[in-house]
Length: 88
View: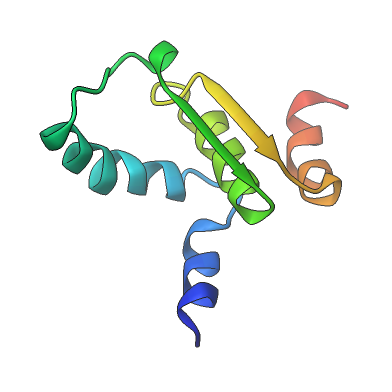
């Protein structure tokens, strides 16, 4: 498998997996080198295509980490999972 396919399988899911990765592996390292806020109102995440799915899922499942999100995702992915939760 290619690296990009492995990353898609692991992080391009409609779950809290990507947000958990950011919380446990990325944010602590960044915090060692930069002054970042732990307040989710001060944090944003963004992405397009599969990155948009990951960004939206991170904010959806972990609002304690990110309260602001810019996501450019395809309608089909959104519709298949989130519309049930939002009753669209």
